[in-house]
Amino acid sequence: MQSHFSCEEIRQRTLRVKDTLRCPHCDTKLEQWEVPQTPFIEWSSEFQYICFNDECAYFQAGWSVMKSQRNACSYRFMYDPASGGCHAVPALTNETLRENIVHVTLCDNLYETPAS
Image (cartoon, rainbow, N blue to C red; front, side):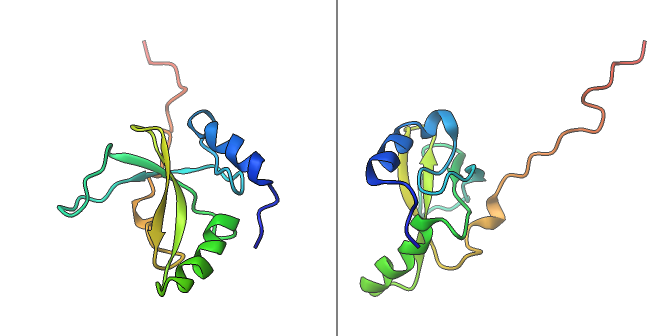
């Protein structure tokens, strides 16, 4: 799948990820992702932002790019809010990494006025 954005558009969109929290390749909202606790990887912050759109051109292209390097995986677009950097994070399957997506829920009474 080819991105419907030009290389220059993707470059410009990547520069704005900090403000938009949207994937520069597919314009999908990035999901907040809690980094796993592991002694093997040191993360710059406890949360990263990842594109989980399985139809994203970046993720789709990753399968053939990685296969050409004899790897059976793809990669997803990731934004690191601590460094401001954008990176690829490996994904062995479409479901890889999803267990750490942070699901934000609002309290039912968030907008109620307190009882007097």
